[in-house]
Image (cartoon, rainbow, N blue to C red; front, side, top):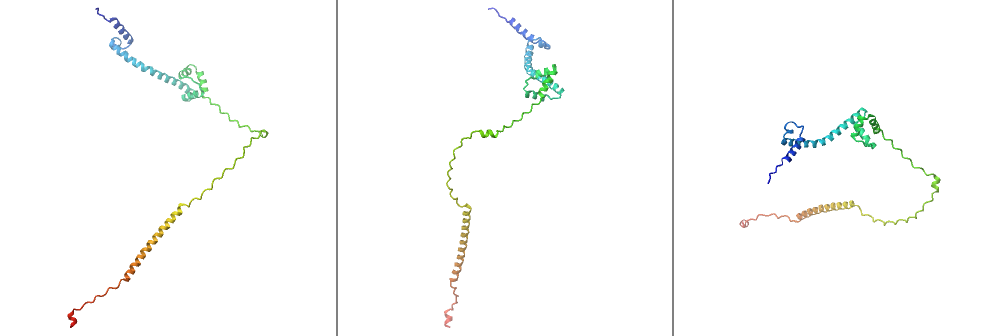
Length: 215
């Protein structure tokens, strides 16, 4: 079986990468291995740069519009706010181009944006109806007389307030205290009576011995 070599395919691949790496300094544009690494890194930076380019151009347009507004004594923010209020939709790329290429058109846009809104018209007062027209109107159908509302049943008298009951309870407590005082007084009188009823203790006389009595 013959030996197969891919010399032609490899050469095409190397030429493609070296062609893309033209302009790099040193071995980055001559050697395949280094040129491949340089190309990968360059592709990453290109992806990031495509995002940054949009930001840079927007910043440039805003700078040009702001400079044109400052020359006319108006700030950039007021000018853009006036455009949005008037419903004039013009992107910043076109505004920057107009400010540089056609200053007269930019002046007209600025005057339109900064023009004050017309004052709101006052409301018209309601027209007064003349007396004759009011008299000619047919009388409205009279509503049937309303039936008298049923009288609510008389409310029962409310019981006496709780304060009176509280007072009674306090009076009763005071009466109880008085009775206890009386009972203690009765006990004292009974003790005195008992002491009075007891007979007086008899005096003991010394007995003489029998021998002495005979003598």
